[in-house]
Image (cartoon, rainbow, N blue to C red; front, side, top):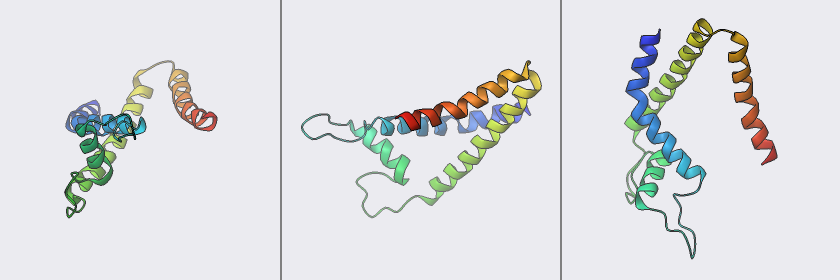
Length: 118
């Protein structure tokens, strides 16, 4: 099981890093120009366009890339599967188990709390 987890992680790592980094830039709005101020670097605009629309910027006639969409769907399924395998391994090899449950609980509660107070 750990071998599957490791191989999936290696295969999807480049794409996961790309989509995570581009998502951070979008969350911070660093991919957009601000009037009379910040000019977003072109690389951030390109990354955001690929992340959001699965196509390159300045290609008005280009449709969304269905092969990329398929890869992203496969990557998402692989990420979910790999995460579940990681959780199974955590419960199998880590003691005390209450620590795992506590971390999972905090991992659910914190984002919800931040969403509500923000």
